[in-house]
Image (cartoon, rainbow, N blue to C red; front, top):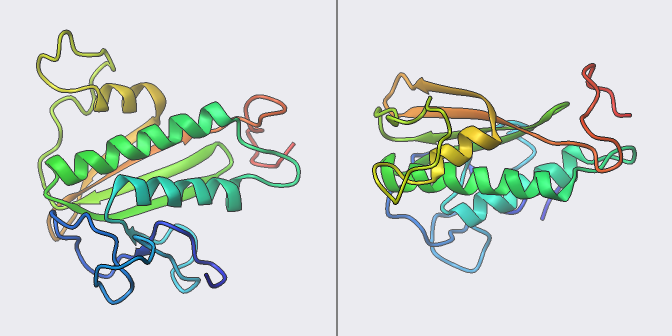
Length: 188
């Protein structure tokens, strides 16, 4: 892996095929290569192409490990688990209901990890701005959106000019040694 590359991400040069769930190498062929990779040319925050929730989770975990964690702070494991759950739900929703995933971003901030999932559908989920209440007896929508609402902050849904939408959220991370990160963004 070269400098700046992370497991689980590939530069987002094209829209993902909705049925594309097999790992691909940089040429787009199926193989044993990671499902995605990011290069230094894209830099932090560049949209990457992932083909599965597993690849997105691996990429998000690498952002925590390589960008959020430092010598003076380390993310609480339970917060990382929440992050990975939100990543799984968002990517799975894009694949199942959003006509395929078109890109994925995970950016470290002072308060946590900001996620963006790009899909190919203009349809905004009916429950996207709901209360986070879990459905009763599997009626109506599933558990994904309520979990995202409960675990994430700053949920924003934007339609993309060329079609599709981008769903952005912030998943808060706390320092394992001292609670919430400082408001000014400096490590404690």
